[in-house]
Image 1: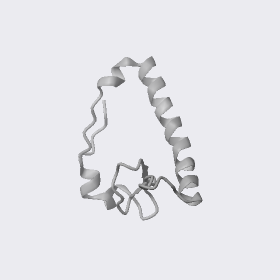
Image 2 (image 1 turned 90 degrees about the horizontal axis):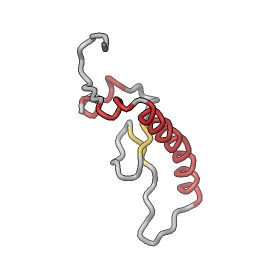
Image 3 (image 1 turned 30 degrees about the horizontal axis):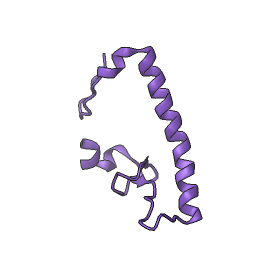
Length: 88
């Protein structure tokens, strides 16, 4: 996406996206910790994942609520471009 190609255009040096552990870390993406093969994460990693999971769950719940109230949201597609046009 254009965000990945030119992150400096979309993020300041102090902005980042918190993602799940399936996403690769970048200078603007902070993924949650993956559980190691031995299944033991240290306390810091567990706390970090817990702190990140709470707002993520809240956002997912809100999106689900909006989609159930406004069914047209299921099919909306937005293309991120450099054009400065108002969205109609």
